[in-house]
Length: 595
Image (cartoon, rainbow, N blue to C red; front, side, top):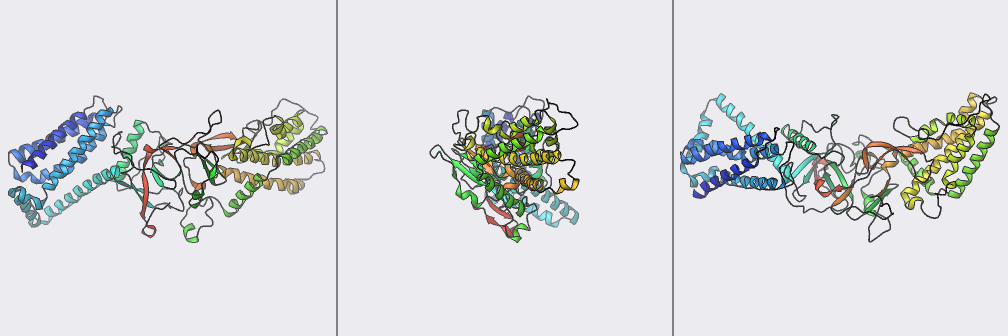
């Protein structure tokens, strides 16, 4: 009994110290933390120490049990409220408060263990009698009273269950529902996974205090991590924590984690680790390459192909029937491989010859062309607005406007000169070298080649269109629509457009980018790079949530432009919440997660 009383006394002292450390002098929600913790501690001291132990009010034993059942939950609530204000406590206060809460929780568990019905007789016979009489009175009470008591018991159990699950989620494990198809076929929408967090250094809510990092991640591990695309300022962190709390107390029915526009946040994310500390990466034609300081040449990451999925069509009919969106049709997949094959075998010498020939042909046509007797100069045809090959609003502007561009070039006194610059500046300016990979790596070289493929198709269309304009008197509308040269090149243009529309899902530049001197830069220690398995339907660490216009290549002053959201970034270890090791729902897909 003395040990039991001493434990209660220690618990009250620790709770009092905890309350003092929740004092806030700021006029915001943090001011209520001290009120809650101090009031609860006072009630605990009065009921447990004064009435129950000192005054021997044995009939209060049920209240004592309830108090210690709720003590950890009430104090962790005060802990969160103190850190929900505009100013965070200093590190030392965070540390001491966290340790106090741990000690208080352990002592409350010990007290509850001693107050279990089977232990009460050895502790105090009167207390055991009070509990026994209470059970008998409930059983013999009227149906209305008994029903009310049972309802209150269920509410009490539910509240305790919610708080217990929240504590388990913070420190032990958490359950997640897969919201999108970025990890198909590994995960489908509505799959539920368990993430074990203890080894991943979980922290107390809204603080920097927690368990040490033990977990290290290997390539192929599926992890859950905080989305680095969103702000991690104090206000956002508070909102995120409160939304998770509401999500739990509403039994996963209410999601309130929204951004400033009211859109539901994709946070946290579930992706696969594909890049490790000390590596530099590149994604080329769906293949991941990596190099390190010890192995400076890019090598294909062989195991990555076992989980990366860019074409879902070969999957079984049973699996495909469960997928809502297959972003790439079989025809589009074939077109992707076709364009990449054509790009790889592109001969720079032959391209140069054809560009010069197209420029010469257009010059001959323009020299004899007259448009209402008006030839003028001063208009820049190939500016940023006309060089756009693709954007999400206007599709492929460059090819769509070929008739207008050709006519404008014909009516300008310097139109032939402008067309020549567009077609030939890439090799006449002196920036192009055919000795090595353009730009020094496969990705930069591939973009340069793709830019030339687009120029050739566009150049052929311009020249053929100019020829038809020059014979306008004898060319009918049917001739325009059925011209075999234009139809052939328009088909090529469509294939190039389809490829570019999905290009950023299949490729990624060297990351981290080399420094200004061209030296390799590697992923820092304790940082990782993640991608989704479903590469054509995954907004992951390759991409930003904002788009911008960008030239296909920096080695051509007249490069075509396209709209991109490519902006790769790595994720620091402290952002990782844990590894997804178990898919527990639906039961038909229950399994441990393998690499």
